[in-house]
Length: 278
Image 1 (cartoon, rainbow, N blue to C red):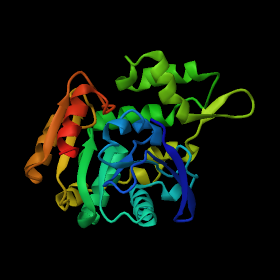
Image 2 (image 1 turned 120 degrees about the vertical axis):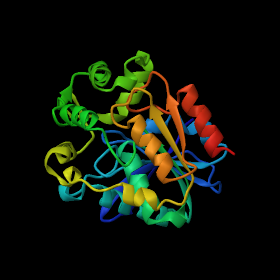
Image 3 (image 1 turned 180 degrees about the horizontal axis):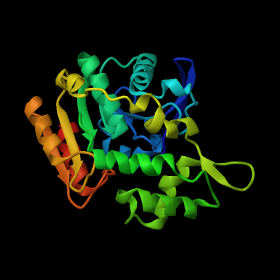
């Protein structure tokens, strides 16, 4: 399923999203994780496009969105960008799927604008992040090599650092990683992501903690939490607490998967269809 590449202006930047069609249907926005991009949802979108107008967002500084001021790589700015996109498209109510960082953006938006969110899917993220998992991500994210000889080398990097991709067939993995890099004009491949983003977990505004239980408790939309059974980011205890804080929250645990499910696992798709398609 091919998507239309769309650029728009928001908060002084030229930002980008993918539009999978079915305009006029209820809107569903997908938001990727810390080092991801809009194409991370290419595999999921076809499963939802018959029911929803699916769009997938490149968060500022990633993918084909413009790079912004380093001081504005933080959840508050990302939420402001999401608000601007929905306003630009005339979307009054939206369902959200957020993976990891995208889930944090979605939680804050849904808590800040409860009347604007129809349904909320949080993929392997909650109001509390396990310190060991955060350290693992910070370590590899801030020390990643800057250039690669070819896509096979990029794929090898992803297999090493992203547990959920280690068993992915090579051709499928190449398709996944090719959107994360670009030619540098010297025969090498470099990251599309702004280098300043990689410094945020160590020294920027991303490092400043915020109590995510506050916006989470204000959410009015039905919530589905998808958790990798082997996740080192979202603990089973936090997922259970989310259900106690917001009664009716559904939790689907995906066996043999760490952080984060691709959402194309059979168990993920079953949970998403039951939650979103009914």
